[in-house]
Length: 169
Image 1: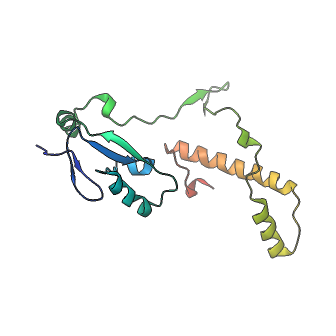
Image 2: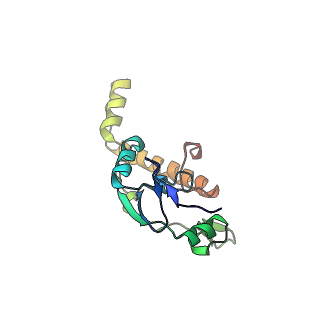
């Protein structure tokens, strides 16, 4: 494979040469292996943003690899640093001899109310013409946290970093 250029712009299809400045979207889903959007200019990146519906994005300046680096990566003989890192789930030993997924320290979100009080009160009022106690928000937040913790463990067990709807049982 003897390439004359590194890649083509994702918007205008202009060739991006080796060791040339190009732009990437700062949003991680645009930088992944499957999408891998690259842009030859900021206007090309800017035309991508409305279709991608990003809330907060920026054009990140990068430099394309040399021809030698590109050829080595294409042949699978690239250095370890250029390869995608392997994702690992860290488990810790428990006193009973089993393993447990390592958990981070308690956060401020452990006490936050996760329920939109006005929406819940409106729903209950419209559905039953009843009022809602303020303590309901705290109780429901605990229930939501427990459901989320369970869903997080389900996603982690499958080696994912994204919690999906199917993780909520």
